[in-house]
Amino acid sequence: MYLHLGNNTIVRKENIVGIFDLDNSTVSARTREFLTNAEKSGNVVNVSDELPKSFVVCRENDGYKIYICQLSPITLIKRAS
Image (cartoon, rainbow, N blue to C red):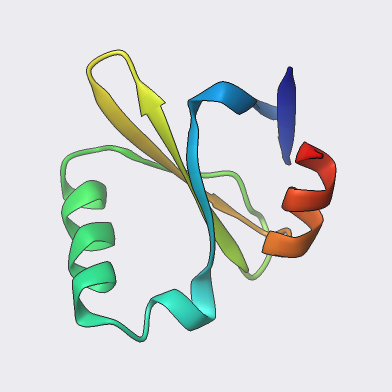
């Protein structure tokens, strides 16, 4: 099955590692460092034209990819169910 993240972006549900609230999780310095390093290495995809509310970490063949999304984590979790 697939999860639609917005802006014509779809990921396989079995590749999802986690769905995180952007406001709450970026309080941690480690999370901010993780996101910064991922962006520098080109592993971040912004699928939002509006204010982002969540990010989704997905497994890829050679590592991981992070999708920045305008949908709330609760909406994404409901879509995944």
